[in-house]
Image 1 (cartoon, rainbow, N blue to C red):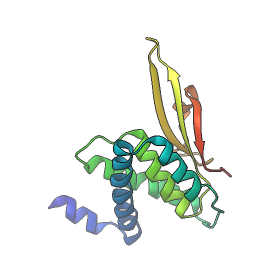
Image 2 (image 1 turned 60 degrees about the horizontal axis):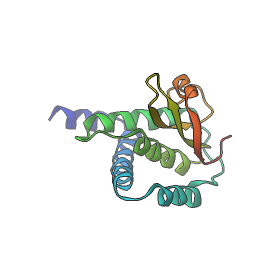
Image 3 (image 1 turned 90 degrees about the horizontal axis):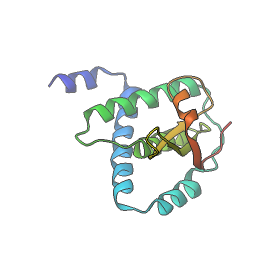
Image 4 (image 1 turned 135 degrees about the horizontal axis):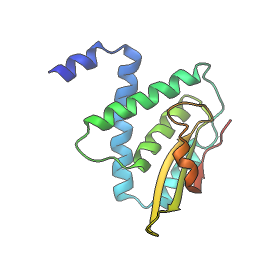
Length: 146
């Protein structure tokens, strides 16, 4: 009951971002589990690649998107992969006209195993600008940055 009260105490815009993040995380999680990545890649490139900037408060939207995704991920019963989270964030940002790039990269760890990671690059400093991602070599880039 406490979670529901906390949800209703959020401002309307944050509740909208939360609901959108929940729906997109569910769809992206199911897509990653059932659809080959080449089809996901083609869909994202065809549908979300060319979006012109329309939003004047892009830093606030980036922050709200990151907060909404974090809140939803903490509530879901399954473990969300970075790929499904970055897909949901990419779509949320591109819908609002923010030039975001979804990047998937790989790196070798100390024990010679291959690690993969996906993230969003918005060109803004903040939660989505992570210096840990610089260790990864970008293999796939979807979208165009600013």
